[in-house]
Length: 221
Image (cartoon, rainbow, N blue to C red; front, side, top):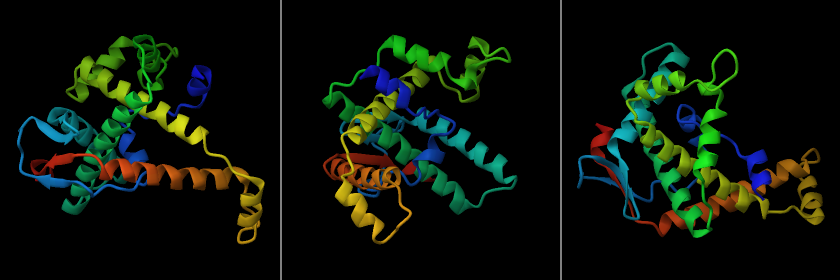
């Protein structure tokens, strides 16, 4: 099982999390942005607090990435959308992490270390992990190694859970035959992806509805 997970796990690093998160799961909007009960907390998920400084680090990095990609200034509406996407991403990470514990999914220190050291982001021109590059990256985000490693641990656990859930979804020949009646070119893999997305979205929406989630309205200002 562990070899299967390592082979198929998609790395979601902090600088790309927003790009991947946008249309992955439905169900957001079921929680309310309200007055801050704790000025150091961006959101609370079932009693677990998401630090405001973590939100700010990811938001600022995502904002810079988008600005660089379009080579233009963003409108207030676009900046607000990035803020919302950022908090959604962090809430999703926290929910999947909490659910992964229910499934007994763990991320060892060795696995976390391997994840970081194998990241192309932190390798030098010789293809080796460079601690200097790693710490410069963290300084650019005003994050401590503990902050980043806690984030990665949650993301890895969440990815493991997604893989476990998705691996249980199958496509039967009768389903493929039926789908080909409306789309003759559809493949089994494409149909499987569509089915998996639908099932996981329904599962995630149910989790959201049964979770206690609140977000600090100050982050939208």
